[in-house]
Every structure is written in C-alpha cells, then in structure tokens.
Image (cartoon, rainbow, N blue to C red):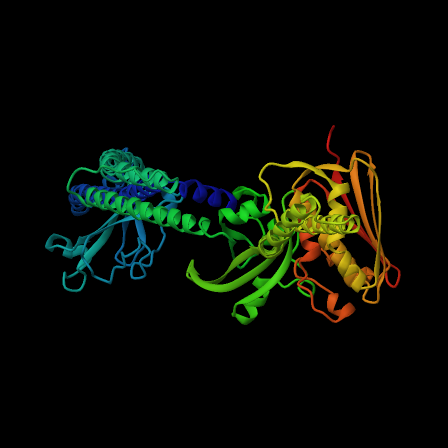
Length: 629
C-alpha cells in the first residue's frame, strides 16, 4: 500500500498539471461525498418526518374508530378492527395497551399479555411515557428482522362518556395507548435513490465547475508558466536571445515581461563578461612567460598561449586537467618532499614563492623552468576559494640569452682585435712586402728573415680571422660545416690556455666529418666542451678529442682524465644554472656551459651524453646527423 502511495506521489510530482488535476479530482470526490452524506441525511429526515405525519393522521383516524368501538363495548368489533388494520400493506403491527403497559389487543397473538415499561422507554427510543401523559409520539425503530419501522404511539384520552368504565378524568386521564408500526422498507431505497440522483446532479455541476476551472488554469496559468519554463531552459542551454513575449495585463503576463527584461540584462551582462574574458585572455597571451591559474583541487582553470607553446599542448589537454599532469606528466600530485608544490605551500603560508621545476612536454621531452607563484582569494558559490597564479619562465631562454651574450662579447672582442691588431698587422705586412720587392736593398740573409716575419704575421692574421669566425652570428640558413677544420681551429685558439694549465691536447679526427648547421654554434659547442675539460683538470692532464662516423652520424668525443663527476650529479649537469665547478678549481661557474651545449646539440637534431667515474675522468659524446653527399 505504501508503494502505491509513493508511486502516486511520484507521478503527481512530475508536473504542475498532474498536481492540479489530482487536487481538483480529490476535492471533487470529497465534495461529492460530503454532498451525498448531507443529502441522504437531510432527505432521510424529511421522509421520516413526512411518514410520521402521515402515520399520526392514520392513527388519529384509527383512534376515533377504536373509541367508537369502546363506547359501544364492542370487544369483538374492536379485535376485528385491530386485525383488519394489521392487514394493510404499510402496517406491520397494531397494539392497544393498558395505561399500565399491558397489551390488551394486538394484531399478533404473541404480543397479548406482554407488559411494557412505558416510563423506561420500552416502546421506542425517546418514547418514555410518564403515568397519565397524553402526548403523541412517533419514532423510527428496528423490527426483529432488522427492518426500519415508523412507530406511532397515541395515548387514548379519557372522556366523559368513558368515565363510567374508566373513572374520573382527573384520576385517569388516559384510557389506553394505541401503538401502530408502519413499514418503512421503501424508505431507505427511496432515500438512497433520491440521494444518488441529487449527488449525481451535484457531481455533474461540480464537474462542470472543475472543467471550467481547469480550462481557465490551463489558459491563464499553466501555458504561460510552461512558456516561462521553456524559455528558462533555453536560456540555461546558452540561447540568450530566447524570450517569453508575454501579452496582457495580468500577473503572469507582467511576470513574463519582467522575465524577458531579466533575460535581456543577463544577455548584456554575459556579453560584457565574454568581452572581459576575451580581453583577459588576450592580456595573458601577450605575456611572454607561461601563465596558468590553478584551483584548490589541482585543476587548471586558465592558461595563456605561451604556456601551451612552451609545453607543446592544446587548450583542451590542459584546462580542466590536474596541474601535475599538464606540467609534470604525472597521474598523482607531486611528492612534496622532492618537488615544491606552489598549491600546497601557498595554501599553508599564503605568501608568494619562486622555485625551479623540471617540466615534461606533451612529447615527453624535459623542460627546465622557473616558477613564480602567488595566491589569490576569490568568492564562488558563497564560499572563499584560494587560486594559485603561476608565472613560468623557460630557463632555456636564459641559456639562449647567455649564448647570444657570449657570442656578442666574442663579436666585440673580434672587432677590437680587428681594430687593434688586424689593421696594424696588415700595414706592417704591406710595408714588409714593399721591402721584399725593393731590389738591392737586402742581403740574402735579410731576405730570409723578412720571409719569416711575413709568415708569422700571416699566422697572426689567421688567428684574428678564426676569432671572427667564432663570433659570427648564427645564420638563418644552415650551411655545410666541416668539423675537422672547425675543431682544429678552436683548439688552436685555446692552445695557449692549455699550455698554461699544463694540459696536453690530442686530436684524432676521421675524414669528412660534415654536418649541416650553424658554424658559429658548433664552434661554441666545442669551445665549451674543451673549456669544461680544462676546469675538470685543475692540476693538468691529457685531453683527447676524437671524431668518427657511425651509422649515419658524426660522433665527436671529448675525453679528459680529470676529477670526474659523481653518479648522483650526472642527471643534472645539463640543467641550467647547475654547477659544481667551485668544488674543483675554487672558481664559481654560471652553470650554463653544458646547458648551452645541450641546447645546441638538440637544435641540430642531435644529442649529447656523458660517461664519468670519480677520479678517472669524463667522456662527453656529441652525436649529430651526417651531412648527405
């Protein structure tokens, strides 16, 4: 039963129409039931009253007949009247009682001689007769078979002609009591039929009223509310131009117009918000560093174009995804003892912080960045939330800037050398050749000396030329680079420093070590590797540079017998700004030399690796694609 009730309530709860229909039907049923009960009760009382009136009139006529028979002392006639009266279709029983309550005459012999307690209401409920009481009474009673009867109780008054038998009127006001039971079997059926007829008419009238109310509600309430709901759903789905378009002057029409006005305001506000969001996104995209906003649940809420380009990701891959997935390639939050998590740190402290991370691009390659983070509180859904704004700077840009800065310094140095040495040497060389070509001015020995001086001046000019080539800016168009000649020229520039450090340099270069790339960058790569080897041998040693061709690649190896690199540091030596140089020769390094080498190798579609043992030395190996013939 409870399941049916809950199912009915669930069915009603779906729509307002069902609720109204249920309420109206329930009200109609209740009203019909109350109306039926009221009509049945009222009609029953009316029928009983009419039957009682008719019974009283019949009883009075019967009383006159009986009084006439009594005066004539026609006992047999009296019995005959009682018997014939009982044969009437609507008379169930007739009794004549003594004032004491004894039944003297009765249509049923079984009632003769019975003594009824008149004062105790034995005749009928509410029919208690005091001795000598002369009022007539009528009531509805139940027969032995359970049928309803109308009992008429009529006391027969004592009169002057009757005083001879019954005594004085003052002493005996009542000669007897006439009791007649009229059948009321048709009363209930008649009452029910009349009640049903009236209830049916009332039900039809109420039904018509309900239909009228329903049509009015449908036209003036339900349909307008349905339009409001439909437009609200369209607005929620993003169709901000949806309108109700209400006409009329009633309350719901006014509500519809106000709803349309509110929808117009929402559309304008959304346009303003969208414009501000586009402006904010454009502002973020104009920042060269990567920007991202992280929510309290590690979800990325906003990024700029620089972040996406830096990590090689799309907006769909980053926004909404956890921050540790888009930046660190992890499926769970970063372990805080090993990685500084700005979200967790700023949630506790609330201050800003700067840290360095190793991010992972979408293609799996590593990216070394500096993260500057700050906390920002905002109100959403009635509560305060903490957002983290990260500014992510690519440290490889610093490496590139340092690389370009070094090239710029070398360019300035080369320009200075060209001005301070190359030009004077050229003048000396011209003067010297003028002396050599002047006939009769020099002896044979002097001519030899002049040739030797000219040869040394040529070497000085060649050194300045090599410096100029080392400082040449990177060409936008790759060129064919001869590594055999390039390595030899860079080593010749560092030969003086090698002798001062007591380092012996050995070259073992195969033929045709050719690549396609930037000549100046290759010179910078070799220069950094050689100088790094010098720093690894503070007490001097042997530096071996070899070059060979393997599997379509040029393999350039720089081997030293210096102090070596601890195994724990091998994975970090190519990180920007990481250096152990101060531990070896007492001079602090920038930590950019090997990072620049790594950047140059990868930009030429190559790679660089290292093998090292502490106390035995290190071998740096650069692999670059071999140039096709």
